Amino acid sequence: MVSPARRFVIDSPTGAALCVRAWEPEVETSAVLLIFHGLAEHGARYDRTARDLGRRGIAVYAHDHRGHGSTTAFDAPLRRFASRDGVRKVVRDCHAVREQAQRDKPGLPVFALGHSLGGAIALHYVRRFGGGLSGCLVWNSGASFGWQARLGVAALRMERMLKGSDVASQLFARATFETWARSVPDRRTDADWLSHDPTVADAYIRDPLCGWTPTVSMAEDIVAMARENVSHEALSQIPHDLALHLLGGSDDPATEGGTEVAKLADRLREAGSRKVELMRVEGARHETLNEAEPWRSQALTAIERFVESRLNRPPASVAAVDPD
Image (tube, rainbow, N blue to C red; front, side, top):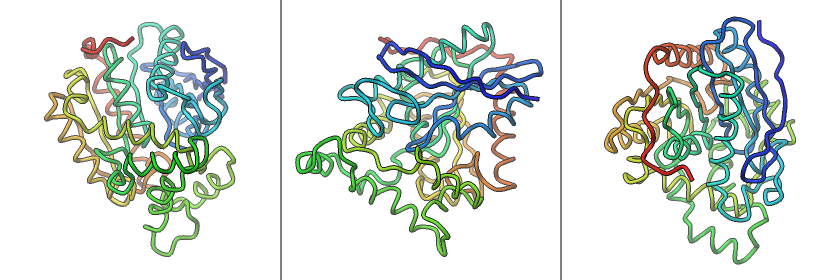
């Protein structure tokens, strides 16, 4: 059995009050998994996943990023990371959650899983704080998100000049969510690109904390993060002995059918990462952990096997980058 999620607030050094949910297994706990959620969603959407992993002995911590869900910060209203240094603050918030998890579960190996935008955040995170992690899963997040060519920094800068930084970025919406929605033939809803499970799409549409368009400010931060994540110099800062697991679905429009995930795996290896696993889930759409069967079970089994494979091995060495 798995206890209901414990919801609490962490005061991050960045000034954010992070809404965190923790799921405690009622069996012997073997590891801790930090989940970094994707864009325009929140940590509560991982309740089913956390419960399933809890039955496998994995404790799960999932927080709402700045500008998302129930997390609050003076410089981060909904749909905005921060007035400045947004990416740095988002990454530091993730580390505050890890520090809490390590206080709660001393001595247990800690893993991180980032989905979509959370995968991009995870790559930044392990550059700064990868030392001591037992592994990192970067799922449904590719080398260029598949949309950078359609959404340049100059275009966003022009949108900011014309509309301001705190308005919804229609350029971003057209290049991402709207394009991905149209990729599904005979779609029932504009959220069908997320999963084959109609209940997932319906719940996403009903949730007022999901599916919104980020501000121009947040869009600029996301594009900057994505572009940095493809550079050899940035990827070489990840501890080379950190175990990495990359996963993409063949029917995921956000990663060009998983091809962008494969490109990211190649770039990580070229940058020196020695332990890169790549998994392609045939037929799966964007949210593998919210997919219909058999795809969802394949994803859960992949997490379990990756964690088990690292339990009796030393964690990654200290990252080369000064975390401060």
